[in-house]
Image (cartoon, rainbow, N blue to C red; front, side, top):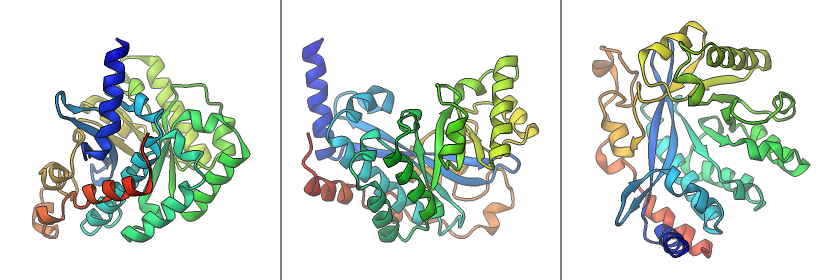
Length: 297
């Protein structure tokens, strides 16, 4: 077992050097209209032997490695560049990017965000950084200042998987998050489990009380979508609207197609779609640049 783990860790270390990582994108939509509002960028590993791997297979190991910082910055640049391209067709398009915990201790996250936005020509409000509970539970002044500076810059901060951990309500007051993400575990049975329904309604109430947006994850069928719509949850993501997909598929998929979903007139009124030459461009270039800047461990 130990030998297999060491071999896996070695493969993971080399994955970034060999350009085996790729970003997939899951659409986010307005529940009332199903109009496309943005996407969450999700890392995938094109493993040479095991095929396409989701983060569940490797993210815990990767997050503990020195290479996590370089990979995280590559994710940020790649996602922002893609979002800037998509905003040409959807002006209000927003991209959500997950951060590694290690990125908060480097002292360069704020400058990396500023530089990336400038290089990509992306306005700050088009970027939303997703933060896990462990970051907020640090409750230290350095992290608080960093998050405040990011908000002053105009970047959104989403509290991911809200409701699943031990975070107190006081964190919503102390940290200036801009969005709560309702975890999928509460959405699946929201119409049949009274406790799940109560949690979702409570989070929606908190969002309204604190002036924070709310988005629900894991919407797989129409039933939870209808519940969210009735209870005025502004946005949702999940397989009902589209699974995570490559940049090319996201751009050309008729269910997304960089236009409002389920709008029969959109096909005639939307601008022409970008060519595949513009899709997912520059990912390998960014990886090579990051490798030159950071020695991977």
